[in-house]
Length: 183
Picture 1 (cartoon, one colour):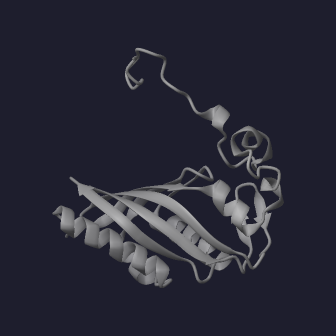
Picture 2: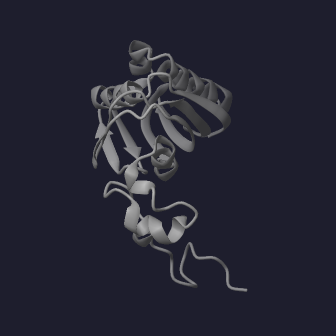
């Protein structure tokens, strides 16, 4: 059972390693039966170990050689935050909330953050912050071609409907809790 920051970091690294090897039995062993997974870049949310494993198998079907390299990790209480770089080749169909993207054969190098809360040594809640715009650009998805160097302006027009845009971000009003101090 993971109880220290080191234990949690090791459990999180083993969790990612099981995904890298497509060892779904081991992956399921690191996952709480009633886990919740949120993928902010795509808007997907699944509940339960079976649904989470199926979602991960879908990523592996689209990118069979994909691996996550944990660059940094920090643990506090029951949670581990990891910086991860995902690398692989898009050789399978990528099923997304916005439709299917056929294989392109292109390589990806995508940065992400993964926050995992553990209960009794198993992942109970995962929040995956994935740079979906970068992923779509790297695989050559047509919906991102217009973005190019003008990412901010074009992103609100060119992104697939499953990806939150800049316009959906709320900023706290000046002087309210969570706002930046005034200078």
